[in-house]
Amino acid sequence: MGSPIYLAYIFLFLWTFLQLYPIIWMGYTSLKSNADIFTNPFAPPIPPKIYPGNYIVAWLGEFEDVTVGIYLKNSVIVSCVSIVFLVFVSVFAGYSIARLNPKGAGYIFYFFLIMIAIPPAALLLPNYVILRYFGFINQYFGLISPYVALSLPFSIVVARSFFMSFPREVEESAKIDGCSEASTFTRIVLPLSRGLLAMLAIVNFPGIWNELLYALVIMQSNSMKTLSPGLMGFVGQYVTEYNYMFAGLDIAVIPIIIFYILFQKQIVRGVLAGSLKG
Amino acid sequence: MLIPIGMVIYLSFSSWNGILGVPIRWIGLFNFGRLLIDPDIINAIELSLIYMILTTLGTVLVGLVLASLLDMRVRGWNTFRAIFYLSVLLPAIVTGRLFVTMYNPNVGLIQPLLTFIYGLVKLHAPVIYWLSDAKIVIYSIILKDIWQYAGFPMIIFIAGFSTIPVEVSEAALVEGATEWQIFRHIKLPLIRNVFAIALTLQLIFSFKVFDTVWTMTEGGPGTSTQVLAVYLYKEAFIGSVFGYSAAIAVLMILIIFPIAIASLKLSRFGEI
Image 1 (tube, rainbow over the protein chains, first blue to last red):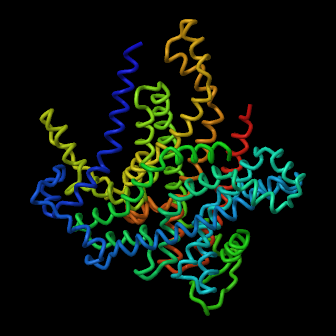
Image 2 (tube, each protein chain N blue to C red):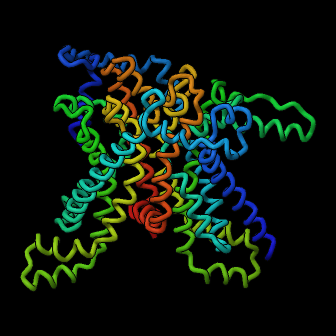
Image 3 (cartoon, chains in turn green, purple):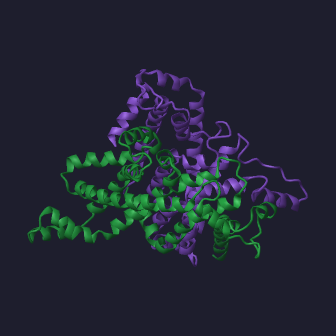
């Protein structure tokens, strides 16, 4: 019985190494000078040959105007606002579908279920045209609305599943006590749905934060770009300044890692519930 | 969401270069005719399918293996689980550029590693052009995505495994079964529907792929990694041929629809 366990450990540590090493490598490589990266890629930087200044360059945009500081700010704004709208709308929608009459609700639900499969790329063109018509290109709202729209089907499906298994007795006793439909929702159901709200926010956040295609198309000036399209600025030209690039990439990655360390349990739980209920 | 779909269908019947003010000319099925004879479309569909199937298989299988290992509940298993899921959350631009650098024969990490390994047996390591060799570039990209996203099916499988009551495997052990037999004949069948869900989700996600390919090769070299979404983007925003790009969009929807509906039906039937 002992040997399978040792084998298991071997594989587990092997995969851990494969997963973590590149990330850690990215971390300490960003502190080296470009020449050092070429001559000795594996070695960590040894003081005094450490260049934290790379981060300043990346943050401030001294290298080819790739201003990671601004991109970070834009990503934060777009992501947070999108999540707020998304959770708000999907919770209302999910609740309505869960409590509506069965016949119509079924069709609406399947409609949203199918919508999950639509590739965002397919809707890129019309969204672009509509946004341009209304002048939202290169505006925060121009990214926020497609992000919300594209994430709604999945979130509504999850919300609806949640509310289907929500105990009706709580709502019923509230109604007996004289609550209207709306009050029941806001005063009783919502406060008890904190798990759902957190789950929706956490599950949708990475997708929106990391999104590239729409951000690339809609945000056209350097000052409005979010992290993903902005970091593309390190590509394109023949990239030889790896140190700045990795500093920029690390600036993008560190918030995610911190976020993950803090919320890891909820994230995993949220992904599970979202996928299995869907 | 319906308006964009309607618009895309309408646009696919037109010739337009996306500049406002230029009239949208209705050219009927011309775009679709072009679709049928366009060699790039065949290329794109082929690449998308290769990518979809290999990435899905890769992530699901690796995820399954990882989940089974973790299901043994070795000490610290939830730390491992946390580490393995981290890469899923990273932006494609970051992991994409990371792997591009690692794959680079001059600067990267893989070439020196190969040289070292070959050196152990006194052989000269071949130089592998992971990203510039048109024949293998798509596989290099697939490899990176398997590395990054294996954690996602893994999480789903861990949940699936945990719903199997311990008594079942213990009863089997008492009856004299080996670990492997328990795995094959008891655990695997019991997670069939979870397996279908993981498969479905991965298939749908991998069909949409744009970020990974774009950040690593922008569809190149040439068109050797130009999957459907990349082709769509290039036609619209680099080639300014909106009408044709919309036709590609419609094609994408037409392809994924039956796959999605079939997978959804299959996974629902697994409900016990």
